[in-house]
Image (cartoon, rainbow, N blue to C red):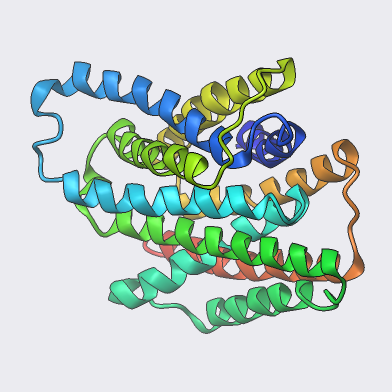
Length: 288
């Protein structure tokens, strides 16, 4: 989990580092396409020609659309805000997951402490939006809002997997659905939005290689492997190290400033997320 958090914390920085050579939307689209190709081959080898005739196609397309939407919000958000801000707002996803499951499953109802955590997290988001009067501040506000929307899309993706047949199939196939739809959505949008130009610099190629092989393939498959062997709520708590690494990388590598309102707001967001996840961990451990 520590290695995964370092990897995920660095990915937003990697995207920003080479954004002048290849737009974020094309980076995310191309990395998704490469990973989807590999996963599709693995799925066909494991399950044969009937791999997608098991009744999961519609759910897979829906979850893939949400996944692609998350990446679209990240790509566009990184054009306006910093990597430090983006990584914090993406990790509001557990809040939206908890709210979605609260509405869907009776045994997933939020406890009073979890509701408090939700309020604290959204208060933190509100505080980070304060004081954006300049033109640069308003641009960052747009990017931050897109980051929150990416977190909401990620949360909706998790709920979609949990409540559908995708929760019972191979994680390789589930990830294939997500990455394939992300590729089919983002690359064409890159051309439509006039963000398709690619300068094949050494940095751009290294960034794409890192994102496609390490992030989109190795890290996601490792995450699914961990989810099958450990408590999801415990892993989610450990994943909160990711925003800390992301902010650290943004400050030390990209020299991004951390203003007081963002520092306070980000702290409240993480505190709220911990309230939600710790309660869920205790609830799942109670029957044991």
